Length: 481
Image (cartoon, rainbow, N blue to C red; front, side, top):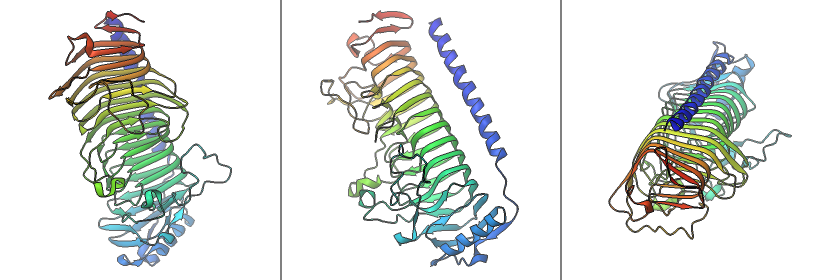
């Protein structure tokens, strides 16, 4: 036990030092952003009407150009409803949404412009980066620096329908930034996105804070992000709440996730990621957009890390820390999956309480990629809903298609993991369930310390296949085979 505690303390110190430094870096980045001048450019002075009828696109873009040419400042959006097509943001401009202001997307699809990658820039690793129809947006910023959207107003995508879009329904994203640095998004609400509320490619030094997102598809989807904070925000989405990958130095904290898909879905490798002090609660307030007439509202996984889950996305995921999380009424609490060309270093999950997990066990699994080096779960309580009809037959089990699926155990499944540690973990279910609690397949070392679970007095409650040593509270109970 002394060895286990010493090792785990070293891991905690490593993460604490890493993320203390990360917050310091963020603070310095934000502080060092070039501040706009005090000049204010009111969109109404450039011809905007804000009556919910007149198209105000030209007035907005004139005000932004004038602001940028003056060296930067604030473009003010007073109370009113402004119908617009694409608004092009420029460097050193703050778009300030006053109370009762609404920027609303027009229904004319020809009014929306697209992000087109800069020639010579390698964007091939990002799914959809070269699809112009996919990359249209209501608010667009490309190659810009020191830009902010702030205030307490609303940006409304109006669920603009595109029968030629993805799934024959998705229209423009609400906000899209690419190839940009020093960005701040604070205080406003995004409603009814026709695709993602926020879509990004290769952004750096970014703060999302005090945001509310209602309906639409994903709230925040970043493909290529460095030095980002997502904090103090609430997401009520009809698809994944936060998603993306190829991230480095990212903190997601003090947020509320309510989704009819996944809370957080990582689809590409990530390094130095923390998810903390947040709640994940289903069912979704708004139906899953793609389910159409089925109006599905069940929340799938709270946290789904699956680099390469959509398209091949090779690389290492490392230094992932999940802590101080509350989960309720979801299909699956955690699902960590490696795919082709993927490998994982260290993942630490601690201080989590999850209730009414109603479909699938937690899992850490690799099928077509490398292995997980070190995965630690500490101070975890999970209550599942038992399934008396579920099967423990693992002969047909294979790589998950995209989302969590039935497993041959009710609590925890692990495959291709070098070392898996569970410390101070309490697992139980309501009702009945005949499956074993655990299923380990090609796990090098399994370490239990202070683990309680239904069936703990039954050796058949933990199934080992091609796996190594199992120690319980420091005592070896199963030798390597």
